[in-house]
Length: 77
Image (cartoon, rainbow, N blue to C red; front, side, top):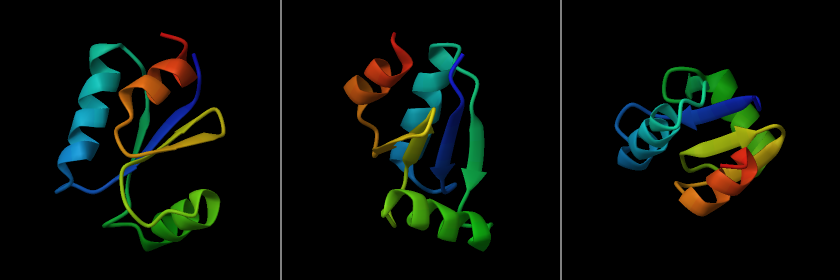
């Protein structure tokens, strides 16, 4: 299984859609709440160049926003 990290906030509807999609496809992931963790937010911006959420990291590849096709391709599903 690929290593998946979702940088998100509790109030972001697209973050919830992303996490629901991963759960529906039985993909384990680490959820990082960048609203509560300033260091993680800075890390997300540094790695991806993005300030908005969700930012999904799949084996080092970054996907910004809930792009179902890109997520499927990265997960090979």
